[in-house]
Length: 161
Image 1 (cartoon, rainbow, N blue to C red):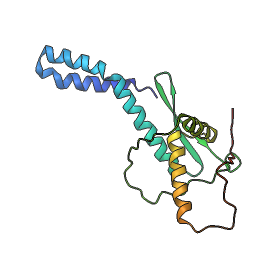
Image 2: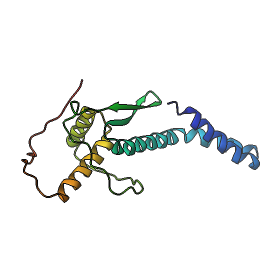
Image 3: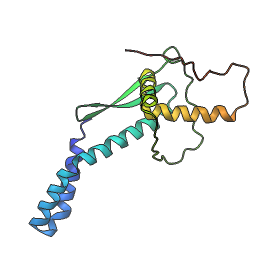
Image 4: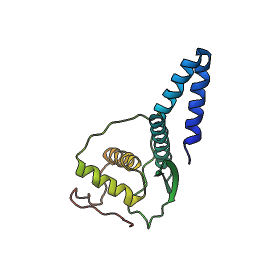
């Protein structure tokens, strides 16, 4: 998905809003439009990533992720089957409220590990973290089952190179 047309529309709207102010204001709006391009592109990518994460949490048999190719963003849908992933599907989210942004700080080694696990499952880091938190909250609210608990030192999964 080429984001350039959206950014050009934003610049054109800014120029149109500045036109009544005269040539100096129009020139300032043009300079401002070019200066804001990187920030606007990042905001569009964040919106696409958040949308992909939201869609992924609501799908039981597929994941959606945003992949960057140069300055373009591609939305990739990957179908999952029980053979592809040993992790159970994410429990349904009971609160269908608005999304919110959260800043999470973690050790670099933990971040790298999370990125590897998300890549192994074919999902974005954000979608992986949402599933992990949802799963942790769901399992905390359920009575213990007869199956053995996972050891925090043991990890299983699937990786595709």
